[in-house]
Structures are given as structure tokens and as C-alpha cells.
Length: 144
Image 1 (cartoon, rainbow, N blue to C red):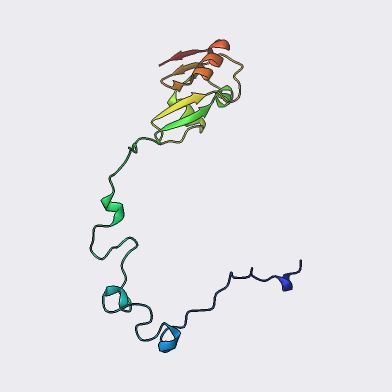
Image 2 (image 1 turned 180 degrees about the vertical axis):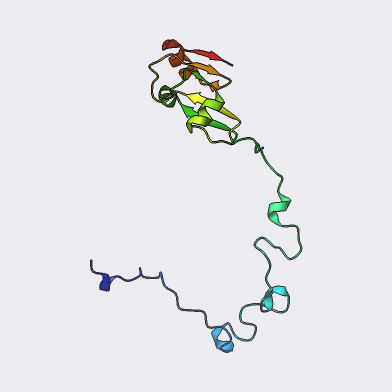
């Protein structure tokens, strides 16, 4: 393949619509805009979803589900990250100071990813079932 031989696939390119070129073109006089009304005028168009004053579809349909405002407040922490911390008593403040958890986090949950080789004491952190088993097997403890 050479750059000077590349061309669009057949049917991919269309000739520009030439409006206002007489009756025979099919787009003469009103140029495909119909008669009168806001959409027939130059610059007379509204936002996406506007239905001429009728209640728009996105407002007619009922709202569904629930989106929690606190969904991003709990941060995930890998079990392997706890092994690299210099302290043996780990809480949310220790994780923030080590830079593992962002400053705005209100909670953290430890999940099983990697392994832990030393005993650590967790305080005030959420722990998954697998991570709990791994921490207790290494001789650590978890205080809720």
C-alpha cells in the first residue's frame, strides 16, 4: 500500500447537497425546510432534544435507579500495599500519610491482591473475606 493510492471506500463520500437551485433539483424554493416555523428560519434551532415546546422525551420518561453521592468516598487498597508500610498499626490516617489513599477519602477497603508476609493490626478499615483470611494467617488482627 502506498499513501498516494489510498482512497475512500465506494459510497463513503457523498456530493454536497445543493439547495436553492430550482424546482427540478427537488430542493428549490424552501430548500427542504418546509413552510414557516422556527426550524425553517436561519439561526432558528434549539438545543438537542427540543421538541417544539412539547415535553421532551428525556423528561417524559421516569427516573430509574439510585446514584449514591458518596460512591467515591471509599477507596480500594491492595493487600500487597500494606506489606510495604513501615508501621504495624494501620488506619486510614496512616494510609493517607503513606500516599496510598487520596486525602479526600472517607474510608478504605482492603482487598486480596498480592500477599502479606508480616503481622499488621488494622483499625477502622473495611476488609474483604479473602484479605481477612490472609491477614489473620500472617498473624495480624482486624479491629472494626
